[in-house]
Length: 188
Ligand code: ADP
Ligand code: MG
Image 1: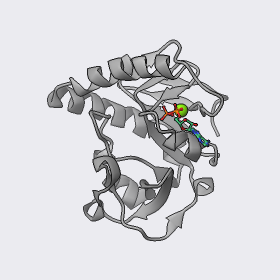
Image 2: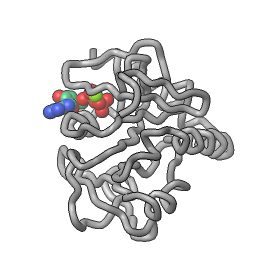
Image 3: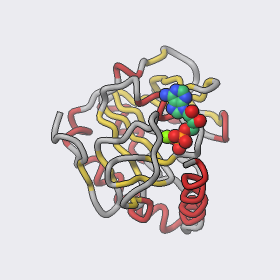
């Protein structure tokens, strides 16, 4: 299982890293547009986004708007867990584990409070299963939230099937530059 997961990770991560900066930006803009059109996003108050690494879709152009109109929450690596903090300004972020921009420690937000979670991944399948970097951070987080779980990826990262283990938590919606796919019962 791990071997098969790793084979897909290697292949798709390489493909993503090989995107030109221009292409990444173009696709990310479309993803941001599609995200903004989601009812689940419009209704959400507490929104967990992420800071991109290794060619992940860039949602940072959304940060200011979320700070103004909602609450922007970002994760910070803490041992095996992601701790969540509300962010008041993008300028307060600084590089942390794995070179990811992280929020300063402030008032911690618990996963139970979140309404909307954007989850990056290396691959997703049409059942919502996800391959991350292989450390299980989002699996540990997602099992603790009732938020809408939105997998964010380029369309070439969405496969018909990816291997999954007992602990893998599937997403509710897959969002790409080309399509929005709802996987579980409609609107919350
Ligand atoms: P990823 O989701 O990052 O692609 P995996 O699903 O392969 O990675 O999980 C990586 C590791 O994380 C596994 O060894 C697994 O034991 C651990 N893990 C995942 N979810 C949990 C959990 N809920 N509690 C404890 N360990 C977990
Ligand atoms: Mg997993």
